Image (cartoon, rainbow, N blue to C red):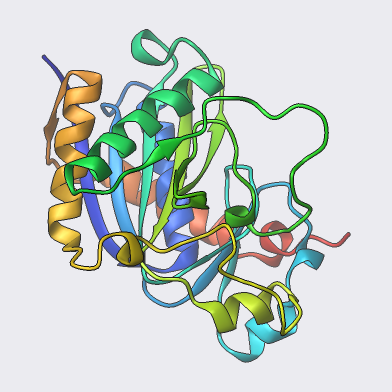
Length: 263
């Protein structure tokens, strides 16, 4: 049976989270590490922007004043306010299971996520059709737009995911919020005071009030093993991955040149 690696990093800074995801993906693509599923959190409330998103989508002065880090992801998509959540990333090569391309990869990963949530009793639905024509919403918020393969509960988006693809592999990052920070969301994304923040998005603790994060991670592990017919080894990060992550953090993910480019 094929072995994948499971890494649980715990809470990290915004810049290190992004740098470590890219470092892991780099080593996986080189064949120096197996396909890797990583779980992590955030040491403080932070905003991640999609790789091509405009910084003007945010109230940057509010973020600076309130010590809310802003980092640009290597993956695409729209902005996410991270906080009380489980974040995951999956790094793998573009062969075998993942030779079908971007949408097929989304579908497979979402199938595993859906299965884990159903193990815990959540009746989740997955979007299986692509959008045609205009985008459903112009909101800068990831959780205000539902794309192919994403998961919802009673019409409310539950998980936001995005991918970065290279010729030899990919990185998928996803946010699974436990709760929604309405006040900061409203202020960071310049939403009117009367706006309905909760329309179309929901935290997992509302779906599963008795949620145990440890049990949730275990359900995810079991579901990924079953969906992809693999076995996880819980080996740690290599010295090269840690070195590369620190280098990427200093050179890129902690710099204004990357995070806050001029329009």
